Image 1 (cartoon, rainbow, N blue to C red):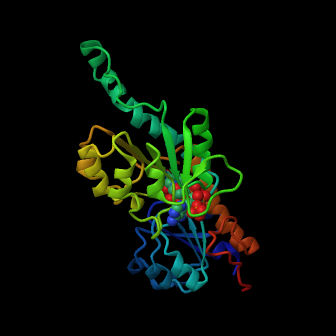
Image 2 (cartoon, rainbow, N blue to C red):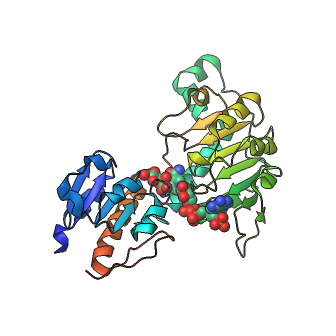
Image 3 (tube, rainbow, N blue to C red):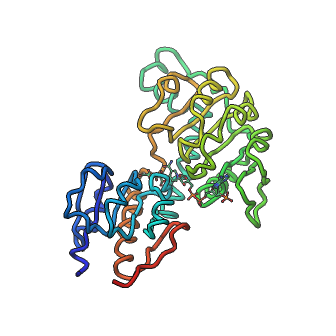
Length: 322
Ligand code: NAP
Ligand code: 8YV
């Protein structure tokens, strides 16, 4: 079968550039969501999925010829990877091309949270500067802070490099220490939370990280503590965080990701000591274009060379000769 006849399924929304680029070589089939009930019988020959969201096992099982799932994003927690491994389906993601953008956003969110810059801008825009005078001094500052990174992979390291220029002390917690770095390694998350006052979360959303930012960790972070999450919402126990912010167990939080996106709890939005972003850490045109190109590039490479450009570590597969 010529490559132009290979069907690529796109469940739900995705960056238009992915579709535009693939449409020249493949037959693109769009369905509203990753619901297998939306598949018609002739779509059983779909060989690739391009997705920015979920791919459950049931969708994979409705597609017996499926070979590759190209995920739009470095985090691929929406894809049932264990099932893909069992079926021999390759999963690819978009590492590296978004690293610097996400690290930039993490620093912006940290500064917004500490120095209340969004609130200060609202003060100006609402005419309060001229009517009422100067915006109140921010109770928190980056000066003298001690930052602990939960995750020191591609993005965590890029955040740490930026933080060096701010003159703060830097520590990290991961499962294994990284060689050749001067940052203090902590073998436990709660141990690190006990000695830093600023915790930046940049781990993947997995079973092992699920709700690990809990009441105990927040209590260890302490009353001057600030939590920044640019990883996944599932890593934070959101109810425990709200309770900690309300009771002054920690001083503030900056969040780009949430447990049940796009729903954000009213209780979180009502708090004055938080800075909230709608999952925009990689959301510039230039970076999303690069991610889109990598999604399309993975599918093209799979059918042209038999290998994905950036398969996830669990699926280092090559294409079987057909
Ligand atoms: P990466 O290079 O794979 O780094 C992951 C880091 O997390 C590694 O340091 C890893 O170290 C650590 N880690 C993994 N599981 C852990 C665990 N159970 N306990 C402690 N540490 C753990 O990934 P990346 O490219 O930096 O991306 C990280 C995540 O950021 C993505 O998976 C995604 O969820 C999120 N992200 C969010 C946005 C956004 O828009 N907000 C954008 C991009 C990425 P060890 O393996 O040694 O534990
Ligand atoms: C994207 C992300 O916003 O790469 C990730 O893991 O969370 C973000 O860059 C998201 O994946 C878009 O679907």
